[in-house]
Amino acid sequence: MSKKRVAVLISGRGSNMTALIEAAQAKDYPAEIVLVVSNRPDAAGLVHAREAGVATAVIDHRLFGQNREAFERALDDELRKHRIDIVCLAGFMRLLTTWFIGRWSGRILNIHPALLPEFKGLDTHRRVLAAGVKRHGATVHFVIEETDAGPVISQQSVPVRQGDTEETLAARVLEIEHRIYPEALRLVAEGRAKFAAPHLK
Ligand code: GRF
Image (cartoon, rainbow, N blue to C red; front, side, top):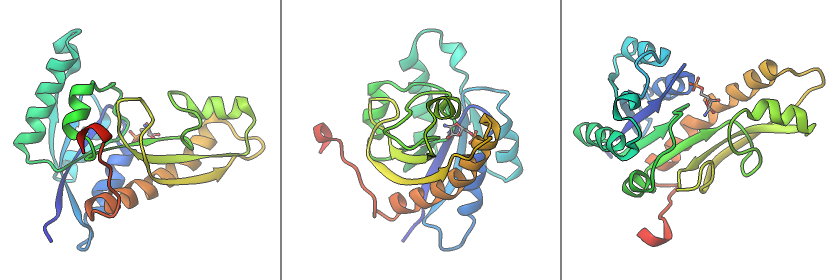
C-alpha cells in the first residue's frame, strides 16, 4: 500500500509537526510528511521542518487582507501541487472557511489541547485551572465547519495536580499530544478512522 502524502499546517513552534515527522520516519508508518505550510514567515517550526528535509511553504495571510478565501485558494493550490492526501492542523492559528473545509472534508485533522467537547477555544490550560477540574487532556478530531468540533479520532487525559501552573499543565498535555497525533494520523491513513460529512456523502 502506498503511503498517504501529508501536509502539516503550522503557525508557530511546531512541536506537534516534529512529532508527526518523527513518527512518519518509521518504515511501517502509513503516511509521509511531504510538506509543511506556515501562514507566518517567522514560525520556528519552519526551521525544524527544513532541518528534517521536509519541503516548506509560507503563505502569509496578511498579504490577502480581509479576503480569507483568496488566502485559502493559495493554500489549496500549494496542497494540490504537492498531491496532498491528508492535512494536519498543528497549532495553525487561522479559522478556515466552509469552502476550504468542504474541499478537504474527511481528510483534515486538528489537535486541540483539551478533552473536547470541554474547553473549546483558546487558553485551555488557564481555563481548566480556573474551573478546578481534575482531568485535562488532548484531542485529535476531524475538522468540520464548527471550530474545535468534529468527530474525535483519539483522545487522552492527564491529571490536573495540586500546585499546577499553566506551564506545568501545558507540558503534561503536550507530551500526550505528541503521542496521540501520530496515532490518530495512522488510523486515518490506514482508513481505520473515517468521516464523511452528511451533505458530502
Ligand atoms: C498545541 O498545544 C496544540 O494542541 C494547539 O496549539 C499548540 C501548538 O503547539 N492547537 P506546537 O506548535 O505543535 O508546538
